[in-house]
Length: 163
Image (cartoon, rainbow, N blue to C red):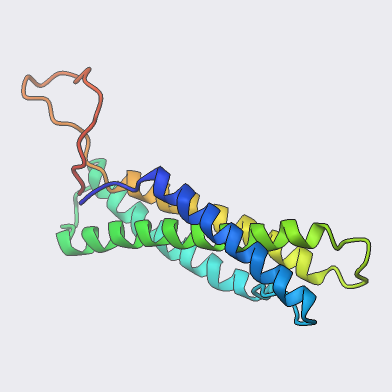
């Protein structure tokens, strides 16, 4: 399985940032509310981040030598896929809501209701936390390099071996 490509995370964030900005500008011109998720969506993001982190810590404990219980390789692979999906979904949420936030800042003086601005900022931060969690849990699933001589390996880890 391949590692997360930082370039793709950036492309997703920028593309959805532009899309969020354009959709919000269109909605504002036509009298529609800002297309942001509500603050209650942060509870869902917190659950996803917590669950991903919980599963990732389980894999990391096994990887670091606590092997009292056998780790199902399918569960480890699913944890890795969940971590990557969390990072990509976080990039999408961050981009979309950051674009809306930037467009809403220009309307700050004219609007009495600043709830969409604060909601878009909160969701942008939530997206960044999702990206960070996905990247960290992906690292948890990575196996350390093996050394055939029994000593420390000085070579950098360039492979993509996962637990």
